[in-house]
Image 1 (cartoon, rainbow, N blue to C red):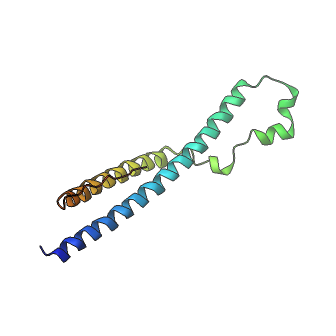
Image 2: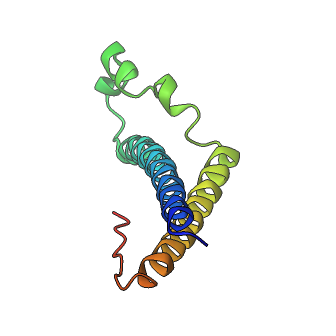
Image 3: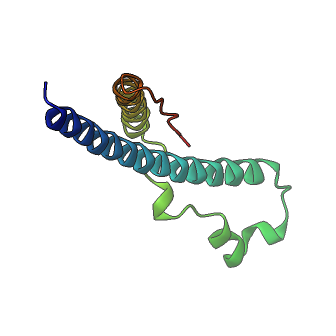
Length: 118
């Protein structure tokens, strides 16, 4: 294999690694946003479970405060959550495997690569 082919191989692997990292970061952000919405829903359920019966609980303001928004409607989609978890797992696996390949290529040149996953 020529030096040019080796360089091209490293470049291609680097691009593939950056694309995989980008995909993982986007899925991670989506998962964190979903988790935030889940927290909001569970907080509202807890607040409502602990409310004492009072006249203030039946006002228009209280009614509006206790409604879930449209952004919360898809939060409890177990199919979507399952797909997201599997997508994250797949993205982590791909990123890990690419980091290993990248490290192996670099170690053959006498240097090592520390791959940041955060």
